[in-house]
Image 1 (cartoon, helix red, strand yellow):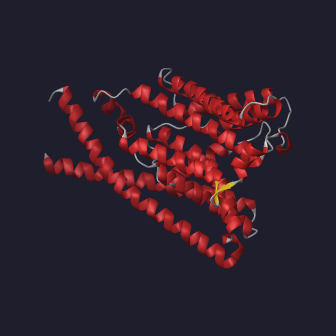
Image 2 (cartoon, rainbow, N blue to C red; image 1 turned 180 degrees about the vertical axis):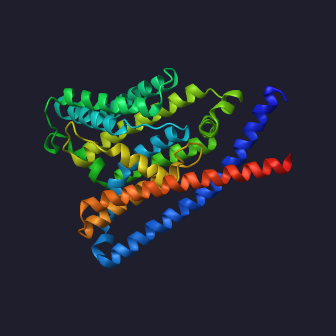
Image 3 (tube, one colour; image 1 turned 45 degrees about the vertical axis):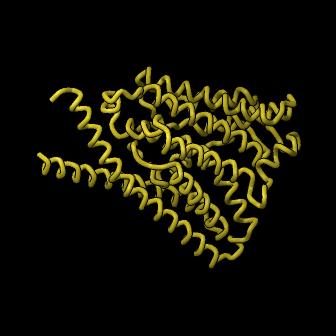
Length: 345
């Protein structure tokens, strides 16, 4: 059998596995929606104020930033990589945005675009070190997580941006509404839809799934794996930069610690939402639902006056369950494909 035939067989096997996986994970996304509705219903019964309009708006605002960054993280995880630096990128971009607006009088749109560019630059560093440096993404982004956070501490020099120094029109992005819907939630919706359309309708988006399923087969099929992986990291960084600007608009008060711990929340949202940690399977819509679910869990436990320890424990338990589910599905699919191949032989 020629190399081309081997590549075709691998690609077909990978495509069959991907279709089976997507069917299973679509069912999982439906299960997450059901769990979300059940959580809201139970919390509303115990504390009716939870479903008041203002409470739901706050929930949407808090989940929106996580959903935006999770959209970028999804692209990276699909390629069987991970980006641990997004929280630090968010913090750096948030202070940069606040500094440009409060101390330098920069136009809002320019400041936001620069934050996106700053995040994309951080993503390029991660992507190049991972692909061309041949260093595992976990190691690279763990290192840059501390590097970018260190840069943020040096840049802030102990300073803090306060809401009083920021333009009201900028703060309205984080707290205002359009037709009764939080502005920041509309931005998150647009971002998620754009990323979702890219993954489903564009060849380069579909290639991310192929890379995550089998990067060796993807290379044999002519996919520019390194370029696509770098692009995924750039998108992740850019969306983290956008998240930083929106963080500043949402909370107003920003210092060097902004975004601390966000990286784990973002990864949890993606994985809980059905994005397989081993790559190749998942959707940005599931990641967004995961972000809403995590936000709802946190809000419901706060409303019910349950200790913050249990908030963290609940998120951790969900993450472990999601990863265990991914592993179980992967093993079942491998066994099914082996049996099918044996029957064909």
